[in-house]
Image 1: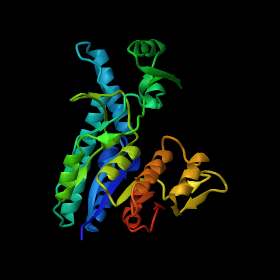
Image 2: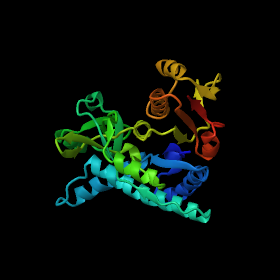
Image 3: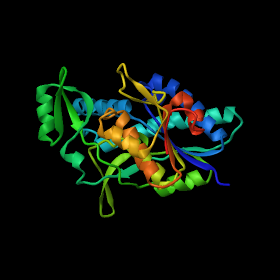
Image 4: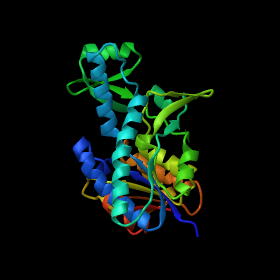
Length: 309
């Protein structure tokens, strides 16, 4: 009997924000992943990178300001750098945890590019705020370069698009390593958004929602389960209100009605729900679970979190 294929999407809680926080956080994430490996699952991991890519973008641009001979770093390059250093910490933490349990399983990070459509509506309506706070003069200089700017508390910040993921360039490599028994880390931060131009892949000035990319990853791998691990025990209706109600399970149809009713916050919970619904709708027998990182093993057994099926 083949192993259960599970794509595990790790949220911000699993990574922290600063370098020291990340070093500590990945140890907890590694324990959760090791539990799933010990349950004899074929595991592919994706992860968030929001604080990290913003930090890299700010640092590289500040460096460029101080050293005119160096160019400012494109968003695609910043995304690639975040995949590298997060993957470095995460794969080493998972490897160590598995070895401590007497389990030898190679762990590999794949620098992953995700194809987006140049005509995606989001390119005409950017939504993702990134980078440092700028003065009016700096903001105007950014606009002259063709970048989008938004006014925020204390000044101005850059805002980029969040296009839908259409395909994953390295999917064959991810599948091959996973089928060979390795734990694979891929599509970090939603992947590096790229535009296909003939045989060339051109980096896009954008950020892909990590959960939507995770759903696409699970779909292309024909996974059995999409496990979206966050900082909440499960989904809630009327979140933060007196009549707040937990959801133990939800059908695709009911989830669609809740989305239409505006029950889930854009930019946080909503992408998880959309990814779960899309994945489960794609093929009979698929399951998606949104759960707390600490409940990963129970969520695998469909005993925790909110279950979509």
